[in-house]
Amino acid sequence: MTDSEEKGKKAKFNQQNLHQEEVFTDLTVGEIRRLSPVKQNGEPDKTRPILFVGQSQIYTQQGPMPVQFPIDAKNLQQAMDKFSEAMEEFVAHLVEQAKEMQRQEQSRLIVPGGPAAGGSNIILK
Image (cartoon, rainbow, N blue to C red):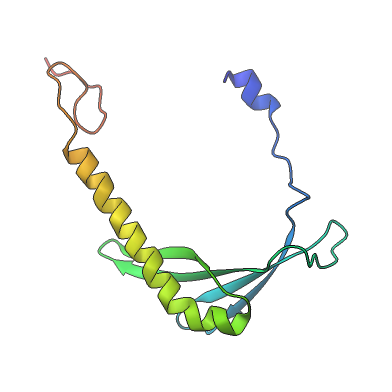
C-alpha cells in the first residue's frame, strides 16, 4: 500500500457493533467490564449477547503488566465467579505463546552472510 493510499483510508466507526460499557471494580484485584449491545439509537439490542471482559495486572520481573481477558458469563455474578479462572487460563495461554515464540526464535537457521540475529542488518568489516 502506498503512502497516498494509506492517507486516503479513514477509520470508520462500526455502527452495527455498538456496545454500552459499564465497569465494576473491587478496588483490589481488578475490574469487570460489561459490554451491553445497543442499537444505533442507544436502545438495548436484545438480539446480541452481553459480553464480559476482565482486567487486572500480573507482576513480572519487568514490573506490573496489565492483562485483559474475556469471561464467558451470562450475568455479572457469573463473571465475578469466573474471574480468577478466566484470568489464569488467559495468563497460561500467554506463557505458552511466549514459550513458542522463544522456541521459534532459537530454532532459526543462521545463514552465513545473512542478517544478524535479532534482525539487524549491520555488517561489520
